[in-house]
Length: 257
Length: 257
DNA sequence: CCTTGACCCTCACGCCACGTGAGGCCGCAA
DNA sequence: TTGCGGCCTCACGTGGCGTGAGGGTCAAGG
Image 1: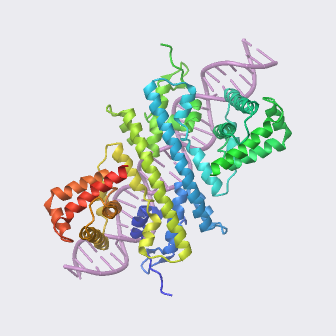
Image 2: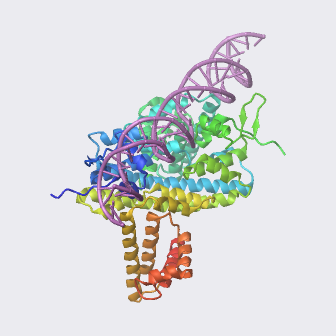
Image 3: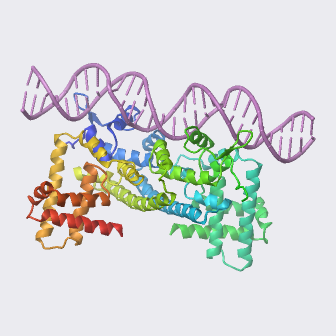
């Protein structure tokens, strides 16, 4: 086998669109150490190094710290194929995120034209904007995360006002779900799924970034733990918790498509 | 007129998805100074402050420094509507950027499977990845930029190898254009526009992020300055420069749709 | 009226991911 | 052999905050 060609720092920098200093830095901290050095001490990157660099830039682009990126890549179980496939899914999620931002911008435009907005409109100004939602979603895929820690961190800082507001919001959602149920709609009707999505959004805003997968987990919890079920049923008839849980699963399937 | 309601730091922080410390920081550096203070010194943000905060986060999301964001927003000529509309266009551009990254990830997957790649494939690993391309594009829209300064900065660091490679790449593109012209295709044929796009991409990679608008500017330059025209015509028949320029404009219209 | 607890304030130091020289060696073309 | 561009290693600087420390504020409850 002929020895594969190598690349010098400046070449790698140009190809990947980063600075030479950045590559030096990655070398210093052991994140990307070139496979070889020439006799005179020049860094010589091979193709595997370039592939690793791509991974690093992907991770960095997801908002991970370099330390986190290093840990992910150095896990012996790390699978390049899996990582790239996950990245592809994340990029598709990213596209939806972009759509959300477009809606936020539209909200800004509407605000300017109507020259009037109440509190809920203010929230809409920033929907699809919260970076933490996105970052944590990245962590979820790169493993190594405990989403509930985020929740604990946030809720510790909530005051009475917030808790009251949270409760009102939850009750409003349960009431909406009860109305849908009373109207005789199925749990996989658009109305029911929209309620589920509103519920997920509420969780995300107040507690932790709630992916559809985690939402389904919550649904199971609601059904399994009777304390939850009873609390929810209070706002409608018995069976509301079951109905909501079914809606959540239907919504998850809708999102998956 | 009833006095509009105001928001406290923690409220703003939660609504916008940033930390309280961040808001303090923006206050400190004069980027976002709340409209009022209560008697006890509490920050009181009004709705205009929230709208400005949205602008700040948008700018930050585009990779501008806070100083640059401040300058843009404080220009007396700054138009919120225009900025939001520009942002919307940029988000659409962003979506295409995401597509490019997806292709880059595909290149990574291909690399893993074929277990073989030559130099050009290496480049493809990072296409759609270069953050500078995107940042500078943001600057272009937020005004206040000199894209050619970027070019000067880059080219100063090119060595002979690079210049030779650049020249080869340019010549290959001109040759391709000449072939299309000889084949009798129109300047707005798909083939011709693809050559134009390849030309734009080449400029972007070697010199400065070349938006379609700037590309059209280049086309005009090629036609106006006979030194350019003669240099290009060398690779085909007389009129190649004119043909390429027309293709560039056709390509720009295609991209606009 | 006083306490308690969740909020708010202002310093001020720390950290990460590099940017930016300074000072000096390598290699190849003139 | 002398440039000249590129490479190397320190080493300090910077932007955008995070994270306490030390201390006022305000509404609810005892």
